[in-house]
Length: 168
Image (cartoon, rainbow, N blue to C red; front, side, top):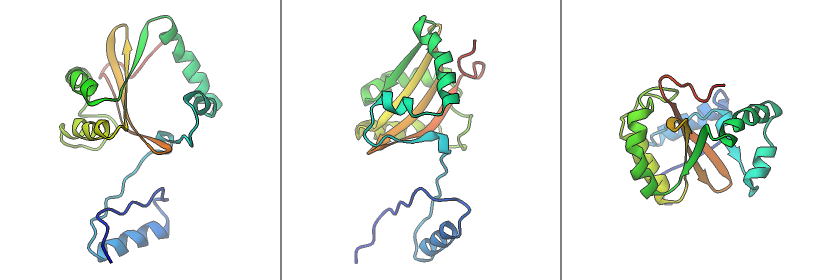
């Protein structure tokens, strides 16, 4: 039989015996095993639902926070930009690098070329969703999502070193 190049098994409970045993078995057959952790609040199954339907299905506490922050968008203090094409990414990325704290945050240390290279691949296959939040005309935060099939996964979050995101 032909051996697959990639085996993706998800989602998995990190501490489960199955996860440990399957990782060990794959390693024993020569596979490089790369566990990938994604916080549960950064994966959303869309199941063909519209954005409005997905939003309506969020926890009440999150909906209340979003309602509070929508005031920034309604009164013009904030602007949300969604970048999905390679051309948009190439045009906007230099401003992201200058403004956002790309080298820190909740991601593991990695080469600075990694995020934009990964975003270029996502843009090329139509799955890039890079949300950029501007407050009072200045870029203050971004989230890098990949939308594939019926699922959106947030891979990175960045904000300016001083902003921490929108504040009241």
